[in-house]
Amino acid sequence: MNRGSHLFLVLSALATLAATGTTPIQAADLGGDCCAALEERVGELEATTARKGNRKVSLTISGYVAQEVTWWDDGGESNVYLHGLGPTQATHVKFTGEAKIAPGWTAGYTLRIQNLDDNPFGRNAATGQAMNQFSPDFSQGLNVQMSYWFLQSKELGKVSVGRQADAAKSAAMFTDQSGTQIINNYTFLAGFPQFVIRSGGNLAPPSLTWGQLGFCYSQGVPLGGDCDGLVMNSVRYDTPVFLGFSASASWGEDDDWEIAARYTGVWSGFKVLLGVGYSENTDAGVSVALPSGSKKDTNFFQTGGYIQHLATGLFIHGAFGREDNSNTVLAGGITPPNSHQWYFKGGIRQNWTSLGATIVYADYAQYNDQLGPGALALGATSSTLRRFGGGIAQEIDAVAMTVYLKYQRYDADVAGLSLSVGNLDSAEFISAGGLINF
Image (cartoon, rainbow, N blue to C red; front, top):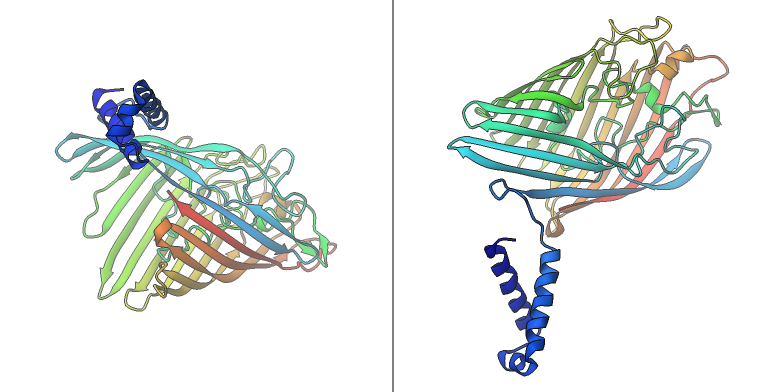
């Protein structure tokens, strides 16, 4: 440890001793015991001090912890589960830093590790294990979600290399600035896609889950929305922000091409955010492999926006996505249908108490013909999945925390299923949770 660090620790130890009432006269009476106590305190401080190997590059540690308690009723059974949020939204810690190269030029890095120990989104493809009616838990442990470095010029933009969010990731979803984007959005990252749908109170075939009616072939997972919201090894370029506008482009391995544009600004007392993105993905193994023998060439277009009246706090958020699967062929020669989804959220964000902003909202999402391989194998030819609900969230500024209560209801119509399946039951989920930043 360098001399400056030792001096800081010694001063900290002296301040601690002073705070506990150890005056100079008392110290003199202690003789050699004083120095021993001081050295012991310095050792304790050294053990709890974060160190970085390169003094020229900054180190910032941030993230949040998020957990929910959910009561659910699938039309035949009800229960209560304790869990986290899905990937990207989950509890995580992020290490970031940068250093100045020359005037207007910087270099830096990001390392993001997320906790998928109680993940309601994931599924074991080999065993079918997931968080659903059969199990309250599904663990994928710790996951290095992002790890990349970047070079940035104030005038020329930013180039990033490594495992990162591709250019169009969440271009529509991230426009939501209501304060509820993490806890409730148009994806299933904050939902329950692995629950098996019931028909007449009986469980349908295990392959017919809610996620099979909100399936995205761009990633091979039941995302619902933000279908090509990929995190993968890629090279990404972002332009500088000009009058609130910016653009991005990226290439990811084997292969994923993406472009996007974004805008943030204030017009006549209205906060406005807009986003649009387009991607083409031909990698059949990302992020979850499609059935063996599949050939993937999927395009995804998305757009979204957010408008908030700053004086009243009234806001609306909308998102739309369309996935083109015309050139994707599954095993057995099946081509998935083209699909689209749309989402609306409206509410109010106001500081009614000294705690912080209170957000009250209602939302509705519809997923059309997003049939996954499991649903297609059961004969499904078209589908409409509806998800609606709402909630209330309270921000607690003093501790950078949000507590919330939300309600979601799923129901669906599917054509082409065998008569033995029959009409599908709805499912309801009521979640109470909290998210604390650090």
